[in-house]
Length: 463
Image (tube, rainbow, N blue to C red; front, side, top):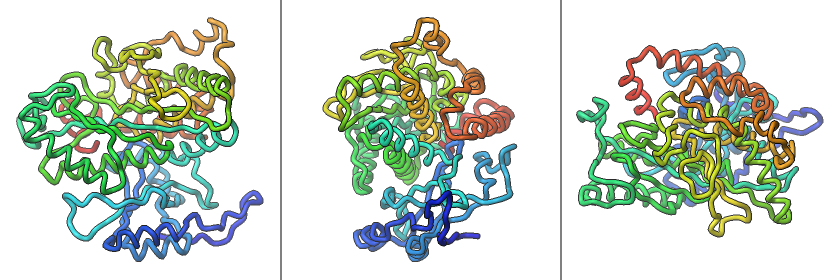
């Protein structure tokens, strides 16, 4: 069934029949953008594949006014990137896709054929119209609401988009792609870059601005063909929505110029690329001392769970080429620092943003489902806030929490750490960890059948 009505229902004494939409938001949007003919409703699956349904604007308008959702098979929660099924692919039943009008924005115009379209991110709900426990976006939103309501903490998240622009069909280091340019280093603007990369970066930045996404900075990174766009700090779900939409825009504009933009962590030999997230805890009501105490509990718990979290934040075998020392990546130790770029968790100055410290999560790359990865980090932090101040722990307890551990150096180690972390499984929504582990097991079995160069090319084409 394509659409499901929001008929009047009561669940656990609560009326859930009220429409999840404010039709005036759509009216304002279509008034501002009268040329829009289609709405692309999008979501990330467990393995970070961007899935979608395309609705003509009139059909989307009817859906919103009626309070309907889009029905899809429950089995879609358990398929791989190529739609092969896994042990958690259940074809019986349905889940409901609920667009979030707060994420509605126009799509890029460059590289697009007529008619004009817009993008809208979505969450999953069940047949009782409650957030689906296996929905990564809803899980993240639930953690944020708990922090706000129970602990008076709100989070801001700002992402760095590191992307590599590649020429297709060129005889490059991996036999299929070659970097857009090679005469550059971090922060440079060579004549080659000025001729090719700068016009591309400028076009992308202007297109993003037209979509309502402001870029704070952009510059070249260390790897061949590698560049970075810095997004502004936003509430977590909005930050991930914006990240997904911005990355899609970047890839589309690159494709229109015959290029491939990839977020693969190591498409070519060298330092690799990440997807650093800057997270700050803020409060309008807590005293500075209480906020600092809560912040310590939050990040100590993230640090304690970091080996298991890596299964979410660095989800492919190729992610672990960056787990090395002396390379300005995230180092090999479970540790935090201040101005040290060799740690996976770095405390930095806030520069006027929020009233708490800003922390950079560095063990995070572009292959992750960012709703799921950030949700796991926030869930681990919330677990620490619930348990209390880490400064009261003994050295033995700190050791048991894994604060003296090394980071996983490969995906198998990260998966094993996640399998053994009962506390992280308990901190996340029911079933999330077991579902994710089943998906990764099937995915890695599929990828293991490919030669290494083909596996890298396959992932670069998809991420």
